Amino acid sequence: MVFAGFSRDNRPLCPHVAGMRRFLPLLILLLLFCAGLVLLPGLGVGWDSLARHQDMLIGWVAAHPFGAPALYVAAYILTAALSLPQAALLTVAGGLLFGAVAGCALTVVGATIGASILLLAIRSAFSKTLERHRQRIPAHVQARLARDGFSYLLALRLVPLVPFWIVNLAAALAGIRLAVFVPATLLGIVPASFVLSSIGAGVGGILAQGRTPDLSVLFGPRILLPLLGLAALSLLPVLLRRRVAA
Image (tube, rainbow, N blue to C red):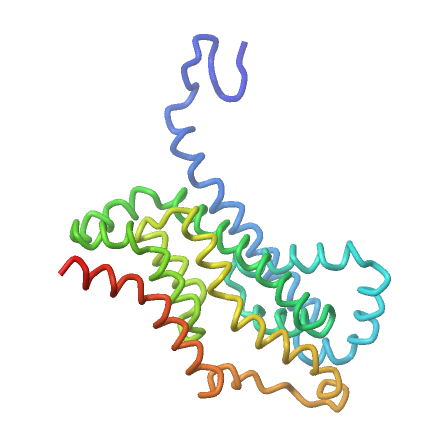
């Protein structure tokens, strides 16, 4: 009897099946990405679309208090897992539809889950390639990353200047464990997400006037400098440990 790709004596029918399985997460992400490329242009995702349909969307959210948040989180998971460029727009829309606090919370949950899926997919599909590159990292640097990975990743997440997908790739290359990746991502994206969600909470009037909200405020000194300060603060335990070791 044959079951799940194995013969009667529990040997694999095909020696390449096990190797192909590690590419399955990447294949799933690729299919989702193709679906996103097909669907997003057809849906007309953008500020104009959000402006035209904001009253309808707000009404739909009010009529579906459980389904609407779940759908938003699912959309953000897809966006984060595929590193789609609509993340900022979706975060602002979350603030518009759910309010600054709830919108930020839903965004953080969706982005963290999506980033974690992407991390696992990269590790599964490119495990051998990552391992070869990881062996080029000096042993003392690998030990430092294993010990202080949370602080380093948190600092990178707090600074919105570093693209989201690059941080995911760096975490995969550094071998940061999922148990460290998830909380560092969750905490690190809260400040910037709250800023964008707060913009969204008050953006209704701007969109109704046919104007586009200015998201460059996120990179202005009033927002960026405190975020850089938080990033530096997150690295304080690393500096203290080095000082004690010295």
